[in-house]
Length: 234
Figure 1 (tube, rainbow, N blue to C red):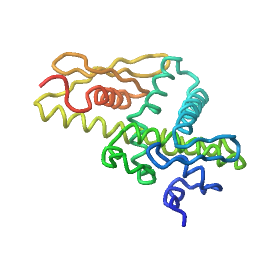
Figure 2: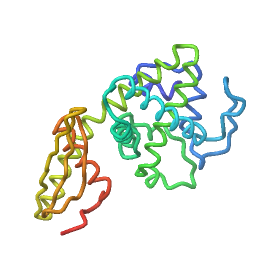
Figure 3: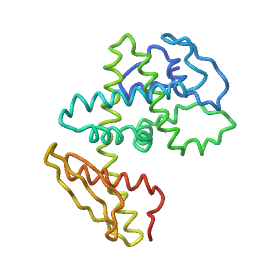
Figure 4: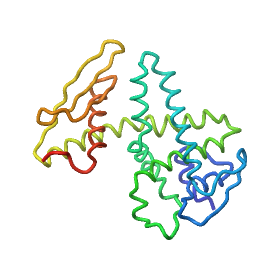
């Protein structure tokens, strides 16, 4: 029986070697197991080595995508856009969308509820899964497979995430009787916008985007990442 069939169907890719998936979802709290797999002399005992590689793969693929598709962006703008896609907050949302924690093998010693709530676990699984996908697809247009996954589930997902960030910001401020105000600054070359989020006339966050809407959403997301539980005023 293939326990990972729903995930494979969701991403549109079938793993030739299921052991890569087993390793990608094998938590360090689970029983020890040495994974020896094709293409690497020692894959690891849990998902952490794959997470390490997946983190580097994601940064490279993201940088390559931005370099090829946004020729007029400056180095600073490219770095900012990349950070929107590779930060733990966004990757945790990607992990939630793919329901990755449902496939994780945890040990009995670990509090399951705590593990399920951990943003770090969710984002780490995206990275370990990406590395597993990279190794398994070595004979199937390897880079195209991992790039397709990133484009579909990491880059495109950011639009929805930013919309939710703006909505959540308004709800949080409304609860404490506050209202956010956005001031925009336009750049001519390359055409872009900066958005400054003000609360009670004080700047709380700054976002950037190719449109006012995108800049506003990013500023909202940055504010929520800085203050995930409650704003620093009331």
